[in-house]
Amino acid sequence: MNCAISGEVPEEPVVSAKSGLLFEKRLIERHISDYGKCPITGEPLTMDDLVPIKTGKIVRPRPVQAASIPGMLGMFQTEWDSLMLSNFALEQQLHTARQELSHALYQHDAACRVIARLKKERDEARSLLAQVERHVPMPASAPIVVNAVGNGRTAAVDGVGPGGNNIRPGISAGVFEELTECNAALSQQRKKRQIPSTLAPVDDLERYTQISSHPLHKTSKPGIVSIDIHHEKDIIATGGIDTNAVIFDRSSGEILSTLNGHSKKVTSVKFVAPDDLFLTGSADKTVRIWQGSDNGNYICNHVLRDHNAEVQAVTVHATNNYFVTASLDKTWCFYELSSGLCLTQVEDTSGTEGYTSAAFHPDGLILGTGTSEALVKIWDVKTQTNVAKFDGHVGAVTAISFSENGYFLATAASDGVKLWDLRKLRNFRTFAPYDPETPTNSVEFDHSGSYLALAGSDIRVYQVANVKSEWNCIKTFPDLSGTGKVTSVKFGPDAKYLAVGSMDRNLRIFGLPGDNDVMES
Image (cartoon, one colour):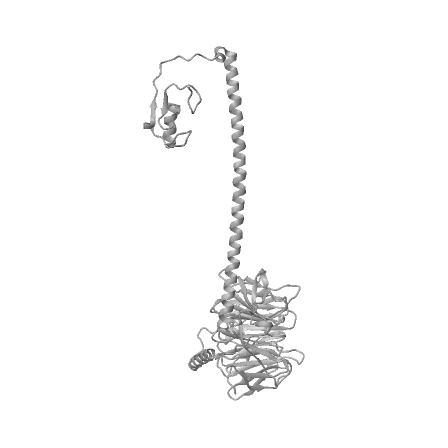
């Protein structure tokens, strides 16, 4: 009788009380200690289930092959061959197992990637749907139109209802109340307004010079046509003829982000400080709302297509919750910033001219617009009615700026800059610094209302006085671009520097020598 495990005659035979099988004692005891079951039937088995068998001591005869050296060598060779064949079979099985494992892991990884992508698309779709349902009350059957935007993303084309008709819910009573409360608070603060002690004095402005120049836009389509400054972060935005908007960190001298998506020049750029939002208007008839992120990149949240001609100006309300766009299509639109919804679109049927500039009054209830036919129009935002008109300019009104004091308005056109007193609705001063062939492209009060900058073939800074006193030109900066056309100028925080854009691709910073954080390379 042979052992059920080794197939040899056992030296110490034992029998399983459960299966009746014969085993070599040392082999079955080791198997039970390792696995606790019968190696043949798989049933649970313990040491107590083994019954020893008593046999006589028999000397097993030596095999014939082991009786001589050649025979023993033959046995060893046979055992070796069997071992090699068994080892080869094990290696083949290991290789097959590795291939199956690799294939399974690849399938698992691919499945995880697909699941992650589908979850991301699902979340984006849910977010977009929730936003549309929350802000755009349209019938359930109305299609949601989407439009491709820059950097491979998509954004909703907002304010489009059934059949492509524009939705104009109007300015609600709640919005009117918010605008009125903001106006009351700012008006009260303005009565106590004082010039900040940190404001750059006149002596410093007289010593300003170019301290840095930064090539931000493409050489193939040079030209910066709009500038804005985020005063809290000290970052500058430029809009170019190359269809891009560039976000630039003045302190480090680095480009934080280049925003692409418009198909024509970017005519207006505006920061909205509290929510890290950014607005761009373009000659491609669209306005885009961009959301900043922690890594400095900006994502396009909304593409607004309410105008059917070039968008010339974007201006943000003092609440930072609303903004207005003005276009050559003879309309201006009032938007809710969070949703990108156009609450109302206003057209002045009394004229045929389009709008070339626009700006909110610091208190927010008055809107100023300039037209292509040299008119300046003042609007009551609550009623959307034209309450005053200023004429006297020659050519399109290229820029509008309200002073922080609340009653001075500066407008620029081909014939220079005119200053208007909003209390008496009259022009009290005119600057004509250039010849008739050179328009004034930009005019800007600083945030304190102490200085006025204008730009045409050069840049000039005036000290603000009252209606009767003379406004002195305290500094003139030459146009260092060589193009003879300065397109935009902005004061930095506390008038510590001026940011200037021209018809080349460089942003130029003018300030005190030695105060610049980034020197021109």
